[in-house]
Amino acid sequence: MQNKIFRLSGLFLLAVIFSTGLMFAFTELPRLADQWLQTNIETPHSDPAYDAVRHELFFDAYAISLIGFICLGVILFFIILGFATHKTGWALAGSVGLFLPVFATFAHSMFYLAGLGLFNVILFPFLDISLALVDLGKVVLVPYWILIWLLGLFNWYAHDFIVYAFMLIGAFIFILGVFTWFQTRYSKTNVATSWIYRYSRHPQYLGWIIWSYGLMLYGPSLNQMKRSWGWNGTLPWLLSTLVIIGICLLEEIKMQKKAGKTCRVYRNRTPFLVPLPALLNKIISAPMRLVIRKQHPETKKQAGVVVALYAIIFMGLSLFWVDLACQ
Image (cartoon, rainbow, N blue to C red; front, side, top):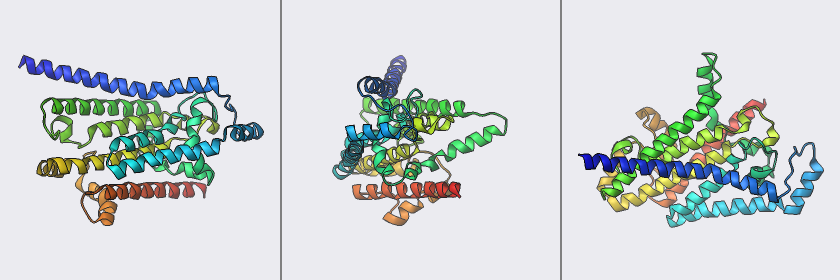
C-alpha cells in the first residue's frame, strides 16, 4: 500500500513538474523572443494611422507582406502534412504557429509591430483582403460574455477572475491528464481509461484549450486598450484549437486500429472532450454526422473535413456577429 502511494505521489509530482515547465516555457519563450526582436529590429511603435509613411517604409524594407504569406504557407503545410501522413507532431507544430498571434495581444508594452507584434505577420494575408477577417473568431468570446453578464448581475466586473479561473482550471485538468497518462504508461496499459479519462477522452488537450482560452482573454483587446496594440487573438485561437481537435480525431483513428474493440467501447461510453447533455451533444455533432455520414471520423480525410467544416461554421457565425454589430 505504501509503495503504491509513493509511486502515485511520484507520478503526480512528475506530472506537475512537466505541466508547469511546459506552460512556463510556452509563455517565457515568446517573452524572450519579444526582447530579442525589440533589441535587434527597429519595428514601428506607433499606430499606422498616425505614422503611415514610417510603416510603409518598414513594410517595404523587410518585405513584411511576403514574410506573412510565407509563414502562413509554412504553417498550413505543416498542418496538411500532419493530416496527410497521420504524423500528429507536424499538425501540432502548425497549431502552435497559428496560436502565435495570440501572444501579440497580451504584450502590454508593445505597439502595432514592436516585439511580439511581429507575430501578427501571419495574419497579414487576411488583412490584405479585409481588416474584418481578423474578427472571424469572435464567436469564441460568447462564453466570456455570458460569464461577464452573469457576474455583472452582482455588480462585479469579473474579467480578471474569469481569465485566471480559465487558466487555473485548464492547468489542473492538463496536470490530471498527464498524471493519468504517466500512470497508464507505467502499468503498460494500451488505453487510458481511469481518473479524468473517465470524463474526457483527451483531457490534456482539453486542459490546454481551456488554459490557452484564458491566455487569449488576457489580451489587451478586452482590457479597453488601444487597438493599435494588437488585434484580438480570437481567430488564431479558434484555428489553433480546431487543429488540436483534428489531432484528437487522428489519434482516435490510430488507437482504433491499435486497440480495436477496447477503444470502441471506451469511445462509446466516454465524452470526446467535455461531458455534455445528450441533446446538446447531438446538436453540436449534427453537422459532422450530416457531412461524413458517420458517428465518428474513420479516416484522416474525414478528420480533415470535420476540422474544415467547423472552421467554416464558427467563422460564419462570427461573420454574422460582425455584420450585425456594424448595422
